[in-house]
Figure 1: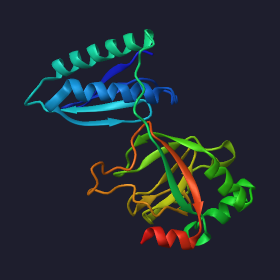
Figure 2 (figure 1 turned 135 degrees about the vertical axis):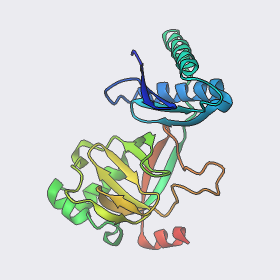
Figure 3 (figure 1 turned 90 degrees about the horizontal axis):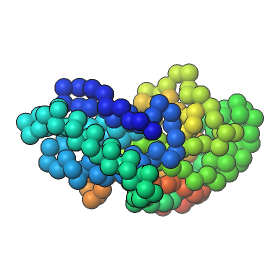
Length: 231
């Protein structure tokens, strides 16, 4: 692994760890972010991890591009040393169970998806809820987690025509991933259910329900249970 540091803006640098998605990168990137937060202290403005990169935005009134590059290079050297010595710390990850109602009223695409994938609706529900998903990244909108990887039998391209509005809480799939829409936004994924638990709540100590490196399990519930939890 030979990370590269690329310019991403006037006060931003992108650390690219790989050009290919690799589940093992989650721990590495997570540890990198933990150390970076410690080292950068008050001149770090924002930190956005993704599948294979980390975007670092910093305060130019408190530091310089050259200083940030030197810090990042030093941090990457230390991290590589940790990995070679087998001392790379595991990211503190959680396993979160999310209730999902797969009833058709909340799953407008599940019938068409059943035809396209040549699977019964019950099979779709079983395959989707049987998997333990890794949170690869959080982005697109606050609290939107990219969860992977889907069972190969559920993999499908995005909708040809995206919706202009997807209800908050919608559980969706597309390509390798599944996700829960935190807010009502446009979207082009297939909607197969609804979750009553907020993915993002600014009143919580940690507004986002999960972070990169966490794991997610979906638990099927009835419409009655969905409405009870929603209240």
